[in-house]
Length: 380
Image 1 (tube, rainbow, N blue to C red):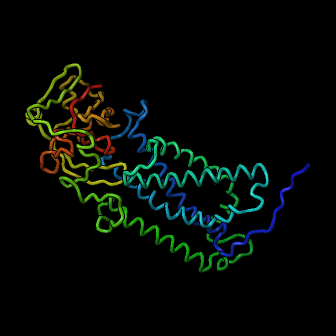
Image 2: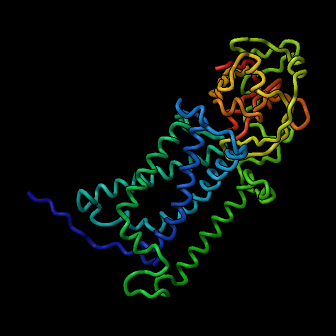
Image 3: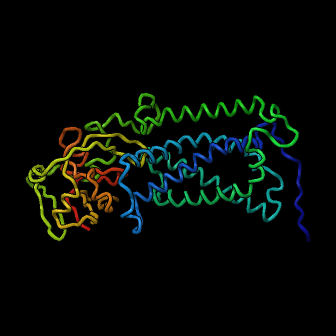
């Protein structure tokens, strides 16, 4: 008995822009946005969770590096949402081709497209919800988001390889074959691309102010406004959330472990040479803001404890719970003169929500690793 797949009556989509040329035009912009998101996302993940071979090689300069890369990551991710929406609109008639599977190769192609679309939607919308710090799912966001990013990259490369003949034919402004330029790029397509450009521009201008200070006055829909916060700086994790209560300065001690361990009271720490730095606090959610910090250089504390110039440091917080309660800094961070155990913020004693009595501030580093409520430093 032979099973024959009948083509059936063709489905007709009257809109002229459901074609390969429109899909390629939008795909170029979407591909750039996705590439930037992938590169900056992998960098952010490595900065937060560096593999052992990379820990001492991560650079602490430029001091504004993470502010730039994570700002690009979130800004391009938000801009990619309207681009992906239009891309899917341009190609969705292909979902209704008959028969749905013509051959094994065609089946594999459709599966790869399904994986590509699912991974793209997952990455963009979970990333968007992360900027609001809203996690309505049972899995850990960071490792799953990172793993799906590689799945998205693989499916995207496979899709480009399969569709390369069509992409090549429609990449330039002039279409192949007998179509004239006016026929290929008439007013419908130009209006669509103009509308998409306007939408992406509007989304970018009204959200990027959380990362780009100059665009701050235009920020209408950004998840976080850096202009608002305790001591002029937003707070992601409060002392209450970390179960930290304000201790008496007389009771607090900083313990520094190493070949020559020692402890310091808050007054003794304040009596040490104090340094001033201006560094941004840049968070994985995309917002960032520069602030003025005053404190003791971490490398001075490590030297006093017997740590050499190649030593790294482990930082332990007073907080009772939290994924980043214990944090390590590689050698380049620990020895950088800009890395402080900060005691003051913008000329004021640290508030409890900003890490009183002492917190870490270091250049080119994610905000989740700028440990607050420091109780112990360990020479590694």
